Image (tube, rainbow, N blue to C red):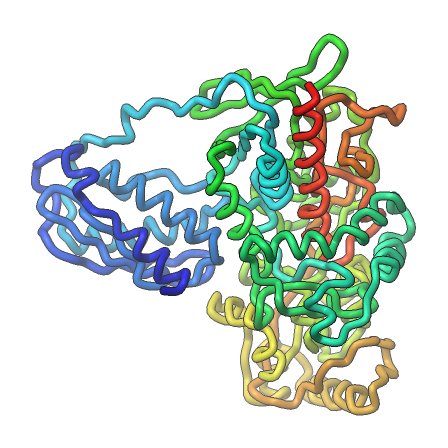
Length: 580
């Protein structure tokens, strides 16, 4: 049974669990009814089984939602609906579009069942708030890739750990990552004959960050990146495919077979591992509002708000993994006014909370004005288009149908070039061969924001471009592929010609993507004060930190960062807790 079928089977929850909790007044006509709603990735179809008074079963027939993110939200909503005997439940924070689509689908089915509103006894109404224990060895704040890496690493060293995630599901920005996880010197690279080294990885990262990066942190990232890939693989993750993202000298972006989205794979792997441990407690919808410190300034716990109640939770060590502030436009614009009003590729929870909490206990910040935009955000689909589309051969053209940049230049360069074009936007152009090379593209097509035509001229007409110019642009680019040299923009990697119809276009524009600045750490992931001394008991990893990426983050380095430094933070937090 594949993962999707297993997930759908799990959602088929028996009514015996809730039959005693609902009113016996007639609300429905008994039977099985199908309903449809529109989520983020497309239509969600469900089959709902009811008797006269209760919802007995909710089964997902089909969904195009992002793997794990949509699945987790739907599982949570299904449980809520069965307990409440109603589709009038709150959405899952962090998965609003998927939630709304699923709720709409269930309501559509219930309306077909002749739904009659009425009083309902809900098992959820009087449910008490689950409280965390009063103390743990390690508190991890944030349930994205960095937080789950830290939690799993700490548990692996025997620590008793609690993880607090303020959103309704785990995953953070990690679940949205698509391109790959950079690593050098891996067996996956060796199997494909790719020659790479930590030194080359280091040089690429320093160059990409304009040498503003902390060299020691970059050395650690590069030298431990292969261990991070091995760690995810050992837990069952698929990182078997290797491609190239902008700024890399060689192919080092590890991702699932077929070029599938890497973020959901990493989140699923880390979450499944986390849920297997009896020493790890996970709380979602749990917002940490402040850190607790001793009289000497050591961090000794956190105050967390769950269902409106505040809990004071003590710990021997705390790991901050709350992410950056890409979804907080006010904060981003305060550091870079040019970004005021920009869209973002980030999830709604990336608001800089952890940075502010760290500041309050004396942490130093670094590179806060270094904020990266991702050049290929698709406004028509409200989705970031992975850099791997360009890496696998797509080109960028303007409204006139002409190329204007090396598509694999660093993100800041490509973003600036797009913003200089008409309407501050461009079009990603690719053919069927590129589509077949990268399964992530199928999701964009199903979501409905990809234009398609049989010929380049017809494709230009679809986005209002110059048909003759686009035809000539593609022919000229194909000649560069044949000659293995881009005479216009010196693009180094020319993987394939664009000659297999149908042809495709996606309208793109830059959006805030990654905040390179944050809390200052050392190579042990300890948070530092302004004088360079560590704050006892406080560790940090991922986008909440600064110094790793300098003035520009290379594609694929964020996942390498969160897993590598997440592990380091978790291991060292557990070791510190063991000494206390």
